[in-house]
Image 1 (cartoon, each protein chain N blue to C red):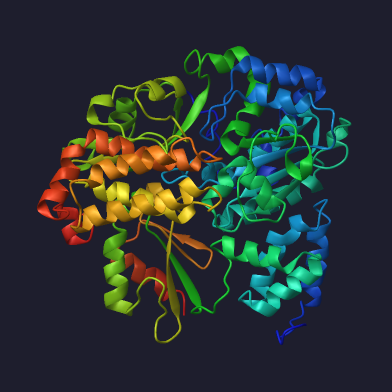
Image 2 (cartoon, rainbow over the protein chains, first blue to last red):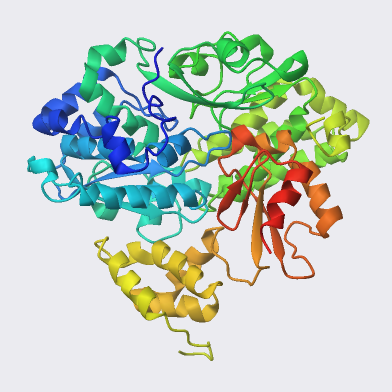
Length: 428
Length: 162
């Protein structure tokens, strides 16, 4: 597949508007803003574009809910709070092709009738924030943002809003709370943001990568977009691979590319030709897959059928020398830290799971701890108001199921015997 | 200021910046995170006095400001060393060797998580995923990203922060 989203990423200076325009940025504004909003919305619906932030919700349908709500003003919010461990796919766009995102937001705003856009970027991405803020300034100077964009009569204002360190703000309603100046605690749904979102108004929240597809759909059409990927998951997808592979990085491939192809062919396989023990296919909220699952196609339905989640496209590979208990403990420490504290099952449960896992890893595990882990997980599942809690238990449930013997060995032998841990370093 | 809290005042430049920030949002509350970022740049630490002033400037309940400051990890309420090292300890970086860097920072700089070097030069904070997973282990020093870290590379990087 020829690169789409990353096709300009290696051109130096793309953050500067002159260079960006010379290389095709904003080239689709004329065509897109010339369309009736309803037609543009239909085009995106017809393309089959689905959300790239993790949930895979059809973008056009989401837009339709907000566009159909008569309350004004409507808002478009770009979720650039990239924080799911193993996920680093939006960062190249934010840092190295920011005008692509701005063009995408202008077009998307036109489709849903939103004149105001906010880009919520995680606080740690300080470089990306500076780059984006400058890009916005330049876009105003050149008339790509503001009252009457390039004489089209369309208005779009854009503000870059910087977070301050909280994973939960990637959850869309927590993100809205955060913009409004509160702790990032998710809202109960319904009402959904499409109707009661930012400042109580109809709001669409889309991930950076999701939006970045829009200018190309405008340029080349829905049929072209659907020619890539699978029947239910069209288009290109950014995968970010880390852990035990020879060539970690961000890769743009068609939806539905097999996991084995990604790891072996694209990323050059596992260093030292070691055996793969486990793969997290879509950020640490996704359940572990085992070596028997490597033929799974990377799209929403196929990964779900294999018992995990397509998620964000953040693939983490563990090899035979990596300890699954240690990895699960690491993930649970993350969730314990990032639980916002609103819902009891998540707040208490991630802490309890962490304690039990810590005990097993450190040698104090008891035979009944495995049943305890699953029982706590069961009491968290489906009982919190946002998806963080269910994401947090995936690693526990899947690792106890697939690698039970490894847990039992920890308990029997009084701790972890993996060499990497002894050395205090994973890289030999 | 009430309760014996030391009053602070934003500089004229910061005041103008706050006006600009406020113009971007339909509510004053929405300016809270940007203004806290600005205040942290201006004063270094979000002390009780700074937090009280922010609440006053934005006409927000002090409890809202307190709640927000304590919620987000990047807001500082305690003094730190001159440079803050945010070392990522999440899975991909851990696999790539975060623990060996921890050992190195302890041996070479007597620096432990949460601690500050005796000369006040560095504070070490363990960070959760910085989004540098493909080139880990990664760390942020103040706001600068550094990745592909080894003990030697850490020394090279830290040399630049005096």
